[in-house]
Length: 255
Image 1 (cartoon, rainbow, N blue to C red):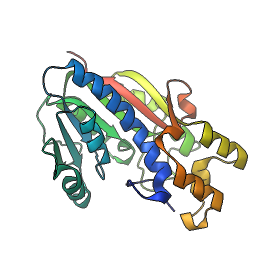
Image 2 (image 1 turned 45 degrees about the vertical axis):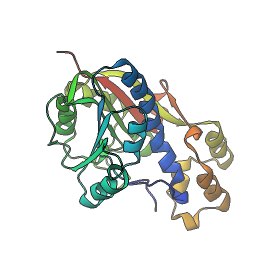
Image 3 (image 1 turned 135 degrees about the vertical axis):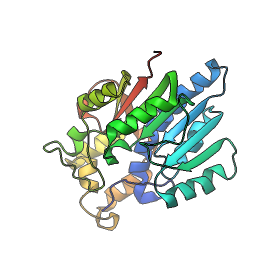
Image 4 (image 1 turned 90 degrees about the horizontal axis):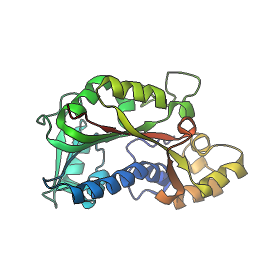
């Protein structure tokens, strides 16, 4: 059964999860472009829990002068370093714990950690580190699955790779406690085409995809997954409790 963990670009059966993950990166790339145009000093961005590394390239292309990816898994970090840092001196990949980042205080203009905190045992410690390494007035962005969508009746995640999932209110509480007040909260939702497919089938797409391996999916479902693109998802400020994923954009206090 596919869960969307460690999803990679270019794999047809994972296109649903990959495109859903890219939505947050694309939104942040837009914000980063605006930041780069308005900021004189070099724009340095941290991708904490960078995984395969495709987000590093997106953030770099958006206008970051330097992007630092961090991942704990040695094989993953080595791949990201080879694939994205090998040909671009503006990309750097480090292997480290997110709760103990090998970075200086206030070194980052912006720090992002997308689809990561649900895997951590010390969420507060990791968030405190993101705040520490991000400059005053800088941005910290966090994306994570919405617990009300994926594990509505329990605090124990259905996904075996998740340690803890969050509602919007729970995530806001964690961020505030770490000194990261939320400036903007967005939810990832299915766009018109995917919503119509769900209405026709009478079941949510995540539920359908969790029934078994891709080979067991109905032909029309598999064909739909293979055709999914980022534009099939929408980021909205409303209806957070009904969203697939949560994206919180925080501002590090000036003091």
